[in-house]
Length: 224
Image 1: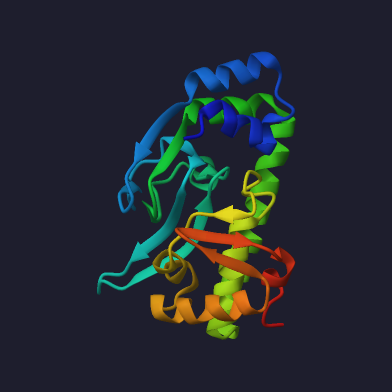
Image 2: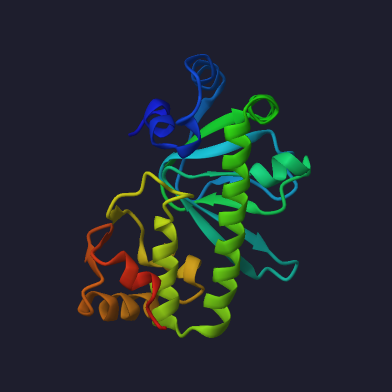
């Protein structure tokens, strides 16, 4: 299981921190382990932390009054999320659920605000992060509305390898077909069919408990 130090080493925003800033961030950021299927936070909760994924995978999701569940996106290992809610100082607008055993890094709001108030490079990182997240949401709408299931699966997998949002991702991802289905908005059975198509195309390899990516650019452009 990875450590907080490893997460900070892999994070883009730590590269410009001074030794004193890095020490304070590490001292004030705590770790929390959550089980597969457990809530990381719930819609309506106060936003008290900026959250990093040391290890694992979470989904941002919402449930309608009628009980229909919509998954917005996944946040993979090495990623940080919740900066928008922290800046707006509003209650959480969605549920966060762990798709597998996940270790979280919880940076208190006070530490996040201190970095915003004192570090120009951190401000630039947050702006870039918000811009990248906006692009991800726009791409998600395109995927859901315009693409057929095989392409939706391919693009949803590729989204987990965003180099800005998830810089620590390697070629392997531990994810089940059911979890891919949540992210792509298709059934597990349809994911299975899509993965066979993508594997036959040489874009990925289905392995026990996850995937190995062979052609990330091919996944990103699949269906165009």
